[in-house]
Image 1: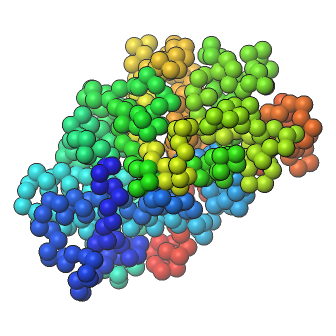
Image 2 (image 1 turned 60 degrees about the vertical axis):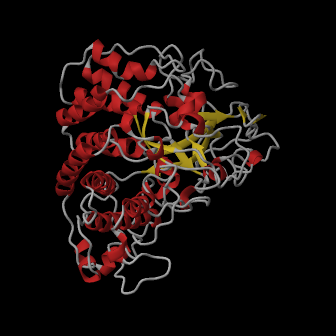
Image 3 (image 1 turned 135 degrees about the vertical axis):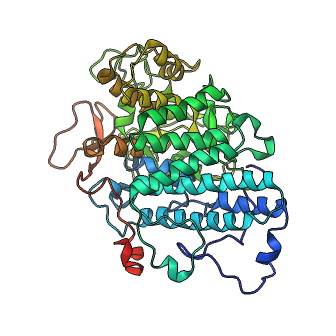
Length: 541
């Protein structure tokens, strides 16, 4: 959607969570409702507004503006054991997993508000598109809007669980009295929506160059697979993912690092991505993520948990006690995806050495203020030759990659109790690990109980910093285990300056202590509906 993504479309802007505008006149900068649905061009413009939603361009995203924006997707790593928000304990992302998640959390409210605003746009679009005379255009655009609406309900049902199911334009009174549907009802609805949308969407290979970024059949099937995985309908999930595989339009790209850079962002591995365009509809990810030396705010910090998840090059688990570990070069002898995803003290980033050692005088010194808190920073997504406006970077943000499809297909087969064969491993996890730029040893474990942790770790490192880890931990039911305890950063053995947890001893490996998490098993698996919504509508309590 490079061509149309940055159009401004005001007609479909929702004025409140569930409320659509009731136009009683025709402003000079808007179309009259009766005159609008008269051409495909107008409909495409409206569809652009549905895709765009509330996403900001060329400006820092201080709160999430969409599930698919960089601040809504990548920043969802902050509540997990993969990353840490430099803003610390006061961060509304950190509060999602540190025992302080309440109904007044500004970020969960933003996700709620943005979802229902987008749903309102979809509903209004679906009511209007039926007036067009071309059945093919109506069918295609309807499928796209249904896909987008179903995706909003997917996220709402995964995090808030029981939410109102709204499928028509509401009056203000109706919006303020809606009732919650159960998570199961929402799940049944979106299974139907994703399934039917997939039949009306073009295949990935049939998208025109001018349609890059628009939904395709494989994107809808992938979200269908996610929905079925979360619902533990494993055989059905496997079938959805197998359909994508059998279509044959997508493949594992040999170059892992380039998948996240503007030069290769349209690889067939990237099934569906949030589109950005430098200087016209760019994102501010560099402003948020770059180190001090490059003018950034160091907001995105990688946690030691993710660093430690990458295996050694020979396929053995990482250990600080292994002779393969080099504390002076953290990427040595490691899975190549570590250096494609993370940089650390002594790494070269954007043409100069990154110095975050606690004993240095570098402006990037760990815990030196508005700088790195962990000593581990995110390299993924950045073209290091980029020298433009840090608030208008053009790199896309992948939402669905083919690698996820293969790993999810294997998971669905495993959890369905179907026999795991070497052939299945080779066509899924080993294709991901075996790409030319990675070439990690093949997995040969066919015992389901032993394969499960291997597969989950593979998802973690392959999809690192792509906004999927939090969802994985919730649906696996292990968030209360993974998101409890101390958060550490990089090891600085022998440093004069250390960071020690309160009333604790220095870490035996010299890791930098940062903070702690305290995910509550009895309540944090379900986000509270925003208090402001409950105050307006008692049915949401």
